View (cartoon, rainbow, N blue to C red):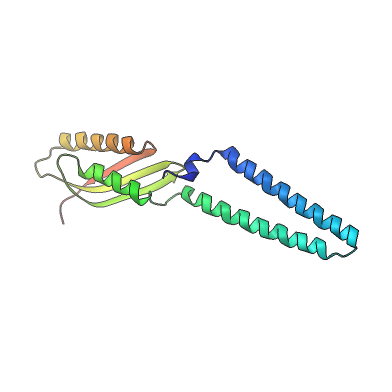
Length: 155
């Protein structure tokens, strides 16, 4: 989840949009001026088409930069892998047959897993390991809001 969406400040997007608006205004002004000077309305149409093309590029740029903010997506594979490894490395954890991460907001994450523990684990052991799992995962990625672990039997 580390990337452009985390490091780009909101004012950066506003500056870009302001620049695009200025370019659009300049294109419109040039189109109107050329129409008035030449008497041909073709220039007004050309400037309108250029503004439309500019808006398509802006829309594509916004889609690309904001897809990482979609709620419900999984964490990036590298982060997902690191969090799973932290869980699997805990004492008493035999296996993690199911591991799921879900984006809950900008730089926010939920982790859920089915975990097979050693047969001799008590409920106190499970509680201790669950707390340690959450502590380790938050150390890897501080944006984790929830860690849900489901003790499960081997299949």
